[in-house]
Length: 90
Image 1 (cartoon, helix red, strand yellow):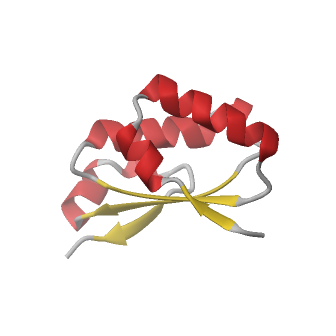
Image 2: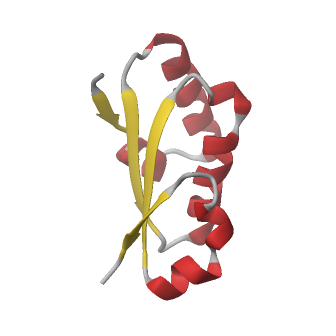
Image 3: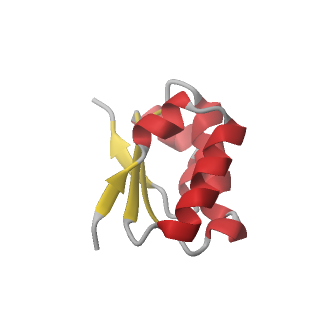
């Protein structure tokens, strides 16, 4: 299965544009979606968690990663509880 990196779209689109983008992918893509973000804005990390848990996107195959320090990771454990991988920021 091909991998499609959608990190740029996630960073640059607002929540409504990205939702529409994913709905379109949901219909047409056979690719695994790959998304990596940084914890500079914790609201984006929470938004990523909400998208990953949203039933309307359950057909999409997501591999999601968040780059965070140990402290950020420990403060936001709930974000990582939905299968989002943690990459330790040095």
